[in-house]
Length: 149
Image (cartoon, helix red, strand yellow):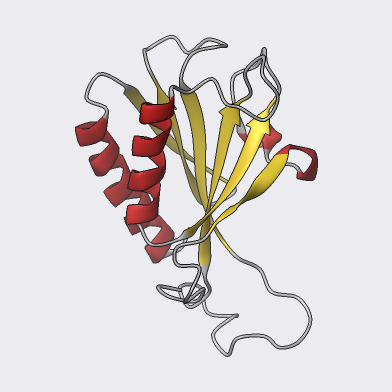
């Protein structure tokens, strides 16, 4: 786990504790990457506000490759966010205001965010980070795409 991803997850967790004081935050790591489950209560269930967050280092293939691409902390990082899809296609089960607050806190760590929607009826998890669930990317700054990276 890179120092940067570890520090970013720590900052994110602290910000989410303040933003969502009644939510339960469960942290861990997967394959050396920090993960965090954000749930509205201690027993996450489908159709509840549950999010899975993972911070990874971007991998580079091909040319050009950044000069620091091989350095553990020199590579750019990205947040992967998985949400459960509601009965309405392409809409998460999160309330609009809560989702806006969650995205705002994720953007605070100054990393691009990849958004994945898991089909209705399952709690978001790491296994849902697949191309078929990918919805798009939220850039830190669309005018300066490499800012903070």
